[in-house]
Amino acid sequence: MPLSSYTSLFAHKDDESRPLNLCLVGCGDFAEFCLEEYAKIEGIKIYSLVDRDPIKLKALADRFGIRETFTNIDDAMDDFAVNLAVIATPPYLHYCQTMKALLAEKHVLCEKPLALNLEDARRLFSGSDALRLKLSCNYVMRFNPLYRWLGDLIKSGLVGKADHFIFRNFAQSETLAEDHWFWDKERSGGIFVEHGIHFFDIMNFVFGKGEPVSCYGVKGKDSGRTDRVTANLAYPGGVQGTFYHSFTRRKVVERNYLDMGFERGYLTFHQWIPTGISGEVWLSSAEVEKFQELVKKLDEYTSLGYSFSLNKLHRVKGQYPVLLLGDKLVGDIGALHDQGKPRREDVIPEYIPDERWFPEGESEIRENYRFILSINGGKPAVYREAIRKRMEDFVLTINETAHRSPLSMEDILGSLQTALDCEQILHLREE
Image 1 (cartoon, one colour):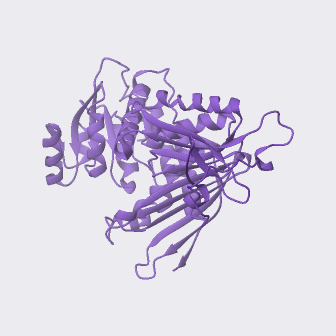
Image 2: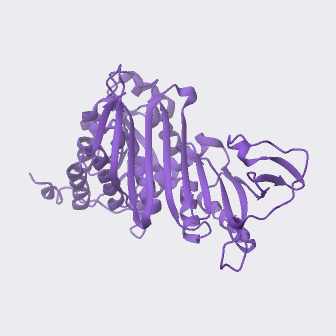
Image 3: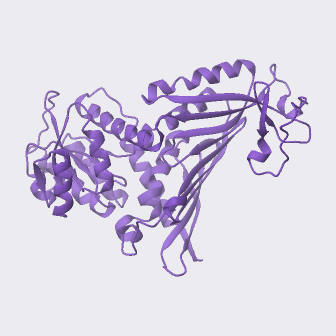
């Protein structure tokens, strides 16, 4: 029977008073993390769980007081009380499980990627439209306050145009056994699809859709697995972007950085769920005030609070800038960046102007400032808030027809297209 034939059988009733009974499919560690946040959202009841492992299923059900549990998705979707399914299983199961949930008249929030090819992803959206149901992908990055603030910073023009960024993901592989589905491209889609898609999506959000130019990777000599990949993309306005993902580290040394270069500034985002930004900017006196006002926009994006400092850098001829806090010299920025420059902690240096800080033809001098902006609570708090806000936005999409989510069908298909294109042109070599 063609999908369109199901429309008359499953007519969604738009009743805002109807509680959203949530069924979580897949009870891994991330699912448990999500449930803790979903339990805080008004209008949602965690109603049932699905997992093929009965021990894991019982442990999670007992913790959250959930009575309805299933070891297969078919039985769970037959329950008419459920009207919202969250798919948190490995990527190769996303298409078939999401389709089952839609045909059972459930709204669906699926983990990334939505599917392992564009045709399947489009079929899912066609099905949700035909059945008047809501479907989306759990891209939590779009609800990170620092990425939302970055969009405001770029629109303000305070740091000029961007020209390049590089995302470096030095990820751990200790929890990924040799037979883990992650290493099997048929089940995961490959590193760009399973993992890199998060970062393709957020950079599409910031700069517009990027187009892959070159991609290459390395297979481990002993393992034969593709564990390091790089993608170079071109973005609108001449922005160049590089993504590097390495799954070769011990957990204790896992690190992630996003460095961005602008005409009048350099930014570094810390951690893959960014909790802070540090950087240098060149601002006039009027722009300093605008920059400080812009930071206050974070109050709209997070309830966690934040800390912020903006300090003028002074320059000694022939040396890197030094950081002054009040009348105290706290360090040579060159030394802080491992440039091998000597520290001068005994004197307050005379400020010697450099022509680079005096743009020709501009009415106001721009001076060099260093800033640090951090969200309170660290990674767990920031991650939890983004998960909660992602679900809250999806609930609004279900209950309020006028609500416009920051994540559209076109966005989800666009990032999947980027990831698939990168996998398609990936050139591999052995280490």
